[in-house]
Image (cartoon, rainbow, N blue to C red; front, side):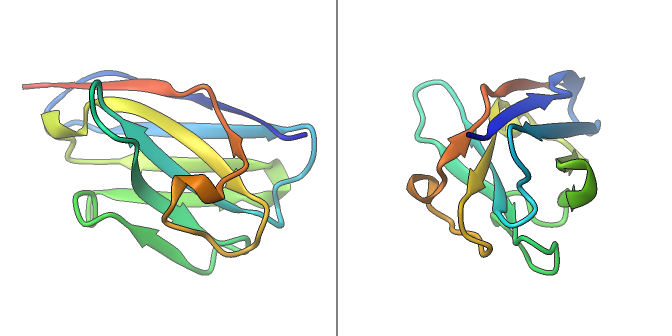
Length: 124
């Protein structure tokens, strides 16, 4: 099975940047769509962004569009999330997820594999 491990979270001031990484192991995820989701305390897990298997198609939640960028390097079995102009509202645990189809979904239920999450805290 696929294991996913996120890293790069931390505490940052509003307006700052963070780069999250998702390392996949166990098997290649080069044929899988990959997504980032986030969950704040007491809130539902929400879609942030996703990328198809080749990296040719991406999608972003309206709340992060223009500030966040998803990318992947299939040869390295890695996915990234560059987060710029961070806001306190971005504070959440961020999860990397893999779907066993090549094209992504906006629904968390469609993703078979999940990382443990990494905390992102944006102070005002």
